Every structure is written in C-alpha cells, then in structure tokens.
Image (cartoon, rainbow, N blue to C red):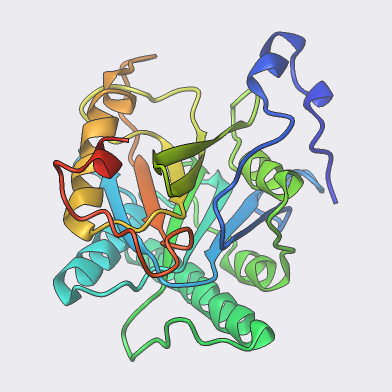
Length: 290
C-alpha cells in the first residue's frame, strides 16, 4: 500500500491533482511497486483492465529508434484492425526502465510483459465467472508501455509477478495509484476524468492517465498515456477522434526539443455505458461531436 494523498506532492502542483473522479464503467485499475525502481515501495507498475473487450486505437512516436513496447503495441493494434475484432482488454505500464535500445531481448521482454497481462485477464474472467473475449492462439489482449532509463533490460520476472499480484479496483484511490505508478521525473500524477452527455438518453465517462516532464517535442504522439471510456464507438471513428485530439494537444507541445523513443498514447473504449445500444458510427452524428 502506498500514499495517494495530494499533500505528498509540491504545494504549487496540488491544485492539478483530483480528489475525486467520474470513472468509466467496467475498468479495473491499480498501481504497485514490483521492483523496477530500486527504492522499495516506490510505485513502478500500473495495470488497467477492462471487464470486456474494447475497441482500441493508439498513436506512437515518429522517432525512427522506437522502443520495444512501441513495436509490440503497433503490431497488436494493427492485428486488431485487420481482424476487425475487439481484442484488447488490458494495458500494463512500468516506470523506471524504458525497455529502449534493448534489441531482440527487449522485444522478448515486451512479449512476456503482455503475456502476463493476458494471464491476468484470464484470471479476472475466471474469478468473475465470465469469459468476455476468449483468446484464440496468437491473439494477445494486452498493450504494454515502459518509461524510464534507456539501454537497460526490464526486470521482467519482477514485472510478471507484479502483474499477477497487483490489486485492482474501480475507486478513485485505485486510479490514483495507477497514475502515481506512471511517474518518473514528473512532480505530480496526471489523472483526469469527465462525464459527457451524448444526448438526452445517453451519458458516457472518460478517464485519462498520462506522464511526462521531459523529452516532449512535436511530431510525435506523447510520452505515455492511456485514455479509457465506456462509450461504444467504431474503430475508424476512434482512430479519427484520437488523431484529431492528439494533433491539438500532445503534438502541439515542446519542452526540451527531444523526441522520446517510447511515446505512446492509447485509447480503449469498452462500450459498457451503451448496454448494447448507442454505437457511435457516424462522423456527422451529435454523439461523435460530443
């Protein structure tokens, strides 16, 4: 257990840290220390898990020397698009080690990290007595992100054990744990949530976690960020909405002129608020504009 109180962060930054939130249905999240960071108890692992399959989209760094997690996630997202299937169920993020400039060993570690996420998804479904999206051979349900020191291998056994053991929940405190676990040189956790009315009969929620204090420069995705929503939306429109938003936010920021090898922002939409109805499928609809 670690402290999630805003008072532990610089006083000038506390006003940016939410004390409560309106979080999307069907997402279970958490943060913990698994041993990536040397100092005991410092959060370094976050897991976001949806209780059902999601439509997923992502944008990545344009740095030609992209890290292993970027290569892995790009392939996973493209596989889901090509198969026209909702496959992604979880995002596993570690801080303290970027798994960048690590060659084939880095890709192996990224695959193991994702496999640990897949295993946790299956354990979650078994515990809940559900099988929301049985995985066929070769279909991974987990995206991975890493941030931190470049040129070092992940302590992958620690991460896999951490994913297995991490406590997940739906409360604001659990979302804060996940946000804090993303931090490296950040001076405060970056978490935001909103409830949005699509029309008179439909309300959805959206929540985002991001991190980044340096190596932020235009013409890339961002540093690391995951956006979750319980809206139901088609893959093409989700891709378009994410590209539109990133062009006007993360891709408009420059801090130090450096472009990271790991920049990734992913959005996963599980449709839990729609109850099988209300799919956003038209770009001209008021629901998409909202």
